[in-house]
Every structure is written in C-alpha cells, then in structure tokens.
Length: 163
Picture 1 (tube, rainbow, N blue to C red):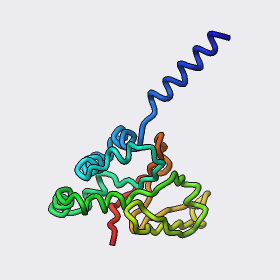
Picture 2: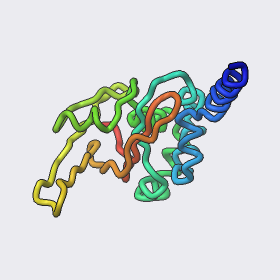
Picture 3: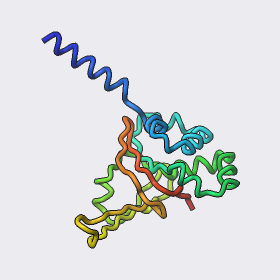
C-alpha cells in the first residue's frame, strides 16, 4: 500500500511539474514565434501565464506574415494598439470546440471588449462525412482544443483586427 501511495504521489508531482500554461504551450508548438514576440512587446505574457481560464484564438507565424512587414513592425512598436489586437484574440473562460459547434453562429466578448463573430458551417455534401468549418471573423480555425493548464488554444490562419 505504501508503495502504491508513493507511485501515486510521484505521478501527481510529475503531472503538476509538466503542466504548461497557454504561453508555454504556444511556444513549445513552434509555430507561434511572432505571437510570442508580440505578447512580450505588449507586456501580456504574465497575464496569459495567470490562472485564467482563457480561450486564445492564436494566429500562426504564417497568419502574421500576411500583414505587410512595415505594418507589422509599426504594430509591434505601438504597445497600446498591440495590446488591443492581442486581447481581441482572447476570451475569458475555457471554450472548447464542442462548445463552439453547438451554435451555428454567435458573438463572443473578448478581453479587449469587442465581440468576435464565430460562425460554423457544415458541408453535408462532403464525401463520406460532413465537413465542418469554423470562422472567427475572417479567420479560419485550422486546429482546435490545444489544452493548457489555464485554458485552451484554437489556431487561426489570419490575425483578426478589432474595429
């Protein structure tokens, strides 16, 4: 019995030690270098390392590459505007893909204060199984439910801009 307790205690300790927040999870994925740079420039790293939970619609490096270089450089230097853009990608609470799929279309309030339009479309004519796509404003969700210990990341292919 003592041996079993020791194994369970070690397993719990290892799970806690291996837990990663949203920032660490994104950095480890390797396709969010520009997002990590932007979070640092905007002083938002500690916020997204906080207890949350948060849902982050995370643009990939390729998404940031769609922004002209001069515009991206200017954004990275304008802390207030950068904070507004980045917090527009964050929703309070943990919203999983299954939660999103329950509504064909909805608005979600971002940490920035504005709403994101989330729409779900199903192509029922797809071969074998229906093909479902999700859009957040003009961005397509390309990967869902990357779980971190303080929330969840959904990967998007375009940086969404608040109005």
